Length: 229
Image (tube, rainbow, N blue to C red; front, side):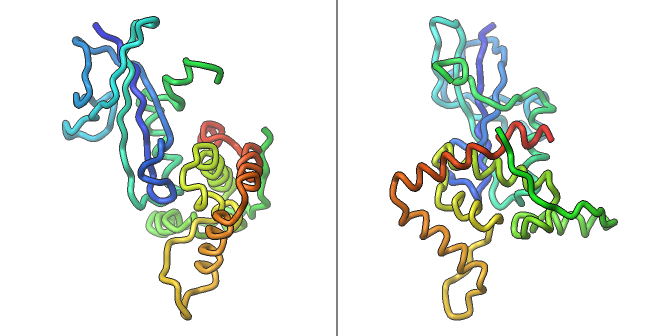
């Protein structure tokens, strides 16, 4: 048997960029033969999808020292409401994946802020709850639960640390929400206008100012801490 350490890059667009590394989960797989780039791997223990589409593995590397193959694959999720992402990550973990990367085995590799949130629970039916989750990322902090607010900050930190759509992450951090794109013009609502201005503001910051903001986000929870709940 051949041991393969496989990284799965989960890219949620938006707010992430399609060329980013995404949020990485990893696992070790035993194969009956040596893998090669382009090989597709399928199995119910890897993914809940019942169709044998599988994962296409890329950048296969043989580690002579550890006697293990290394590779990565990716999944792009487009227009998924941000409130659903923590559940998605937990489902991958429940199937045996773990947050992190095989790269954590190489080289040298907090305080969190809490928002004031009204914790009074409101009874809503399933359709209303789904509709609320779909727009959760657009709501102000005090209309969202603490769990989502912590995950939102974790997304800002993750994107900042990985230079993934940094202007978007900065706007998310400044406004405390993610705002869908609208067309600029005289009828543009105030919030989308502030969103555009916040993104432009980041691009006008000096490199030192951008790095200072990035360092500030290190106080936020990590993705792992946020979904551990």
